[in-house]
Image (cartoon, rainbow, N blue to C red):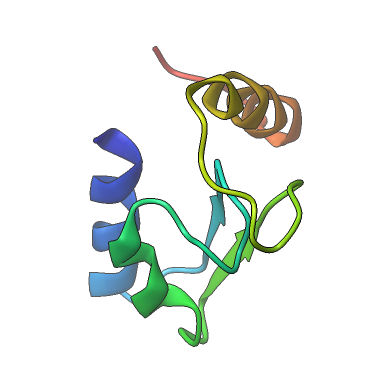
Length: 75
């Protein structure tokens, strides 16, 4: 989705970026996020236990964190 596209662009231009995970860091969702674990300019944040799987309801909680830490949100 949009989140993945933004992360790909940030990586391409070596721009610092933070990913808010809808799962634990031990089981990143989507699986492609594993490749960002050791990227020097991309951080990963999760409020879930390390091996907690993604659940649909986690996206709402994750979006709350993103909007709370943002200066602005464009919809």
